Length: 179
Picture 1 (tube, rainbow, N blue to C red):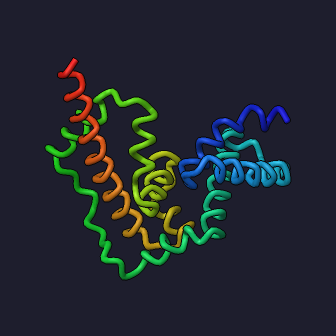
Picture 2 (picture 1 turned 135 degrees about the vertical axis):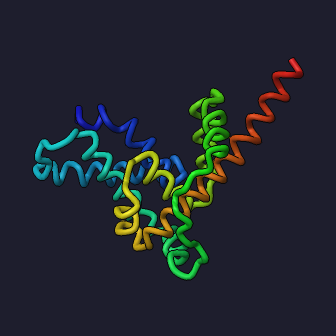
């Protein structure tokens, strides 16, 4: 019970990022902890216990999305969707733009709201790669998509986030100018 109490808050946040519903996230966390407790003997002490639990939660969230058919739209876009790997070459001016935008002092709620506005297939890849630190190879294996598709969706997620955060920043500046 102490293990559950110690980690339930963080795991609710992890699962919410994937299923985008507090009620569904709670269900996923419950299912995840059932898996944790039933396989605790498989934890070998390598790495952090929290990291091991987090990985179970992410996999449980992905299973949930598959069961709810929310995953179908993500998988169906995996081939022939026009997403090609354009490489990860960064434009120096764009990098500088991104740096100033992401250092603009957004609250965690503002950032989470922006991430939650992403289309499902982009939010999923963004969460897995940027937050959970899955490689594109791991993502492609877990989601049955091409690595290039994962990279492309991550680029699109970042571009969409940039647009959303830029608009929010403009709104904040207008509001502060009015004060």
